[in-house]
Image 1 (cartoon, rainbow, N blue to C red):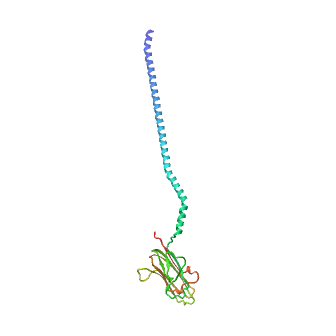
Image 2 (tube, rainbow, N blue to C red):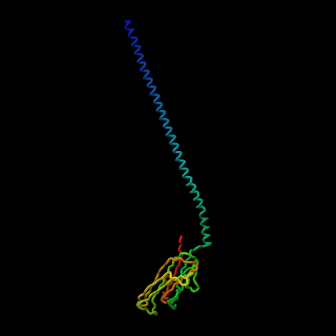
Length: 254
């Protein structure tokens, strides 16, 4: 019995050591798991903190950029408001200056001076002013339009003829009109615009209007005169300003 007990004691001791070793290993594994879990949580906290800091930095950057962009707009609005506040004064000053020294482009508007029935043919048409002349003058002969400023001008001419019961009507009548330009350096006049029309008539009740326009460069001192080969047939019956006229208007080239 004693021998059996003596044999069992070492076995119990080995079993206890095995159990202790297993318990120790379990404790070690548990401790390693705890350390790993703590490390994982620490890394997760660090990652979350980094994300939060990055988000704050991005938000701060966007706010700063928005403020920088809005500041010039606010300044511009302030300048516009100030400009609008000063605008009436400036506009009033400009209007006053314009009224004090008006600058109108050169223009002339002439209508036929009637009666022209007794005028010999051919000859120049006589004019009278429909409106005030700007940059032009009408010669003392009432035939010449004098240019006072170099430039490019749009010239419009209309001439109206009609039949007369005291003028015999042949098989055909050729109506001829030439706008002549007298300029320094030329002995003879230059024809710058022509209007021709042939009338086939059998009675005196006919009426014919001819219109043409041209853009020309004119110099200071140039003179324009309109010659007609049938002045005795010019229409001088009511509203003559809308039937036979000469207009010249300055054409800006800029």
